[in-house]
Image (cartoon, rainbow, N blue to C red):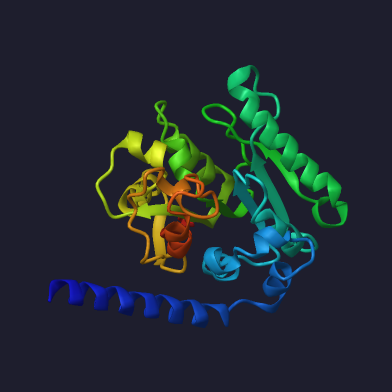
Length: 279
């Protein structure tokens, strides 16, 4: 009886998840939908839209084409491909990327990441020539944008990376707070777990409790405005051998149980919108 009830609950959750996603999709503004459908996006990135829900997520965060938007740690530019053309004519995109001058062996990853990101932007000036790139690296490269200049700060799947031994997460949330205008918003998407996890496990596995992210933002001065389950995935049990990287798109276990993890899909994720008080 218990197994039957559990199965029924999961089925209902899945149905509600897809219904909510379909309704949200209808609310995406035409200009944002056009940027998402644009030819500047790679086929590989576009193929993940059904998992990442870019239109619904950016709409929930309150984005407008006239805004100054900061994207913290854009990585390979998955969202940059959408944000750059969307904001190009009327707004501004500031990409706070890893610096290209971190020395030594430990800095190799950051140098490579920045070189790849800069090359991506340089290859398509008609799309990216107005993107302002700033340096972001904890603990001391945190001037992501001029103080009080941004309408919206965004970060996608990055908070766990700041939960290192140096405890830099407070500094990053504080930097986002400084960059925003009074009344501006912070949008956070992060891998979510309902389990109790240690700080070390967060950093190593990538999953975080939602309450912890909320607490970090509130500590910096933000007010939680709204939560969304746009990026929820009820199939994700949050306890995979290689953490979030076990699931698509990384599939870090290779062919081992590949069909199982592909069937689960991308991680269960929280989607949170915070507000910097106007006063």
